Length: 99
Image 1 (cartoon, rainbow, N blue to C red):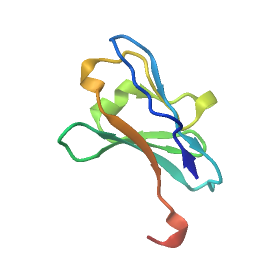
Image 2: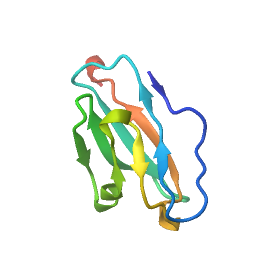
Image 3: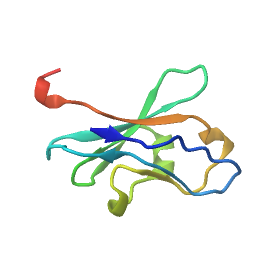
Image 4: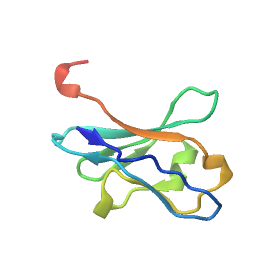
């Protein structure tokens, strides 16, 4: 299961923002995927994280986000800017079902 808690609203520039995603009951082969949705655009996957903490990034913008081993699956944005204004959500792909 995934729990992102309450909404995170960050105002102002150069603020450090944590985007939480608490995952429980994952298998060692499961991944958590982070998506970004900007106004009027389709969702874009930024990166995905393995249970072991390995991070695979899908695009250059994903390089602006980091994942701390101490807060696995949470995203950290150290220098929030206007361009980061978006909805972010984490997702889990259930690979055991074959879908």
